[in-house]
Length: 134
Image (cartoon, rainbow, N blue to C red; front, side, top):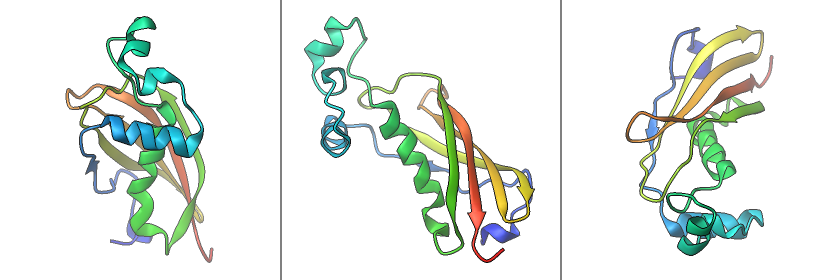
């Protein structure tokens, strides 16, 4: 379904990511330049008094963009803002979701959420998607 047909209250198809792996986080560290060892090394996470390795917040946030990949021919993400609400650990299964909150001309504002396998909200935020040609 086209985003143009969406009305406030409609949701995009949610997406469940594969379990978070150490390799995901190592690759992200290399791509982003964020080599903080709490994201990849057990001993560093333990030393920081964390219950285990935690995913980069921006890795988790970036994955939210995948919800809009099917719509790249219709527009683009103009604004992306989130609040980190919880930690993501190795093995977590994350579900990404977006619900249309408001339409103003060519701009659609979505409430976005990332939840873990226990339903814990790890990211809450908003994405403004701007349609082409309007």
